[in-house]
Length: 299
Image 1 (tube, rainbow, N blue to C red):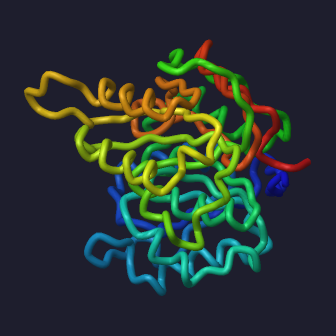
Image 2 (tube, one colour; image 1 turned 120 degrees about the vertical axis):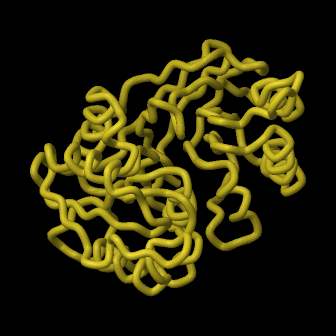
């Protein structure tokens, strides 16, 4: 069953920035905020800059901020300030099916909220958080804005042909590998049957990638999905090793036998192209392309 899409935005619409995860650097935040304000009227919550150890304030504060932004009729979309850790802690306190459907933009730790939205039958946007947005090119920012404002499918993405060729279609799901694996066995893991699984990560050494990948295998994930899209795996090398993270991932992909293409500029790398999660895509692993069959928003 197709997932529902949030309403399209217009330039100068009101949007909210929330911090459901970790605290953040003000300099990078301000740079990203300037980019966002060049397109939209941005609202910030009063407690946005709070900290509580490794979190952007208490669970209650972060939950209330997210709920308020989604409930506010003037707010047309919600952007995450940063990833880090913490979004999983708000899941049990937020009933997403009962809240208005608005575009949610973020990645990394926001994978938890994306998965919960897909479980609720909703499309969301895997894209730069505000602290990353100021470091992206104007083209990446414009593509994000176009994804939010144009119901048409975004342009084809080009990666690298995979170890396992083939062409498959299905809904694009997933996000950050570390966070995604933590949702196994919870009610916030969406239906995976026939899906195209997007995976990316940062700072995870090859054996950890293997461990998380094997967790997915043992949980039966690779028996359910139709194909795999690999984004950036940044800072994932083992010092002085004779192998790379790419070597390990290539072996793991071959074990699944599923069509897979990698090298897509999605995730923690210098370029983080926004993509709609929950929409149907076509993966051509032979050619290394990801074609979007629908847009992220409704007219």
